[in-house]
Image (cartoon, rainbow, N blue to C red; front, side, top):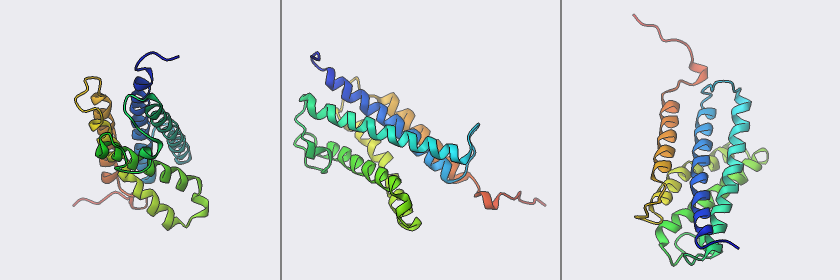
Length: 184
């Protein structure tokens, strides 16, 4: 049904798209939490967009993992997608992918059940997912090492965008302290 390598390319493409979607999810989460305005979007609009990108990220990660398992180019099992270091192939780097999958699941579940969690519990669990972006980026860079089709440009752009969002968030003043400073 599929040509040789079709699922392999599909898996890689879905992984690259997942990283880009995760980049926007991370950026929107950072900017939204700091109430940094985005042109044409209210705070509620930023939150809806953040949730939409989160859902799309989950879908594309599921496609990425499923295609990698079904493809057979590398022997991966379902357990390898969830248990770090379980894979016989590149256990460290595939293991980072498993950690990223676990964090994505935690992110999605805490988002879905946010209303049923205390703010403190939700925030603590959600902050733990900030490790997700760098782990996913390292997974993207390392898996398939030396492969000329490796999405270096996509990973570089993703890291750059997330880095800029982080810098903006760190440099932004909290809205409650948005009073101009007096100069002498």
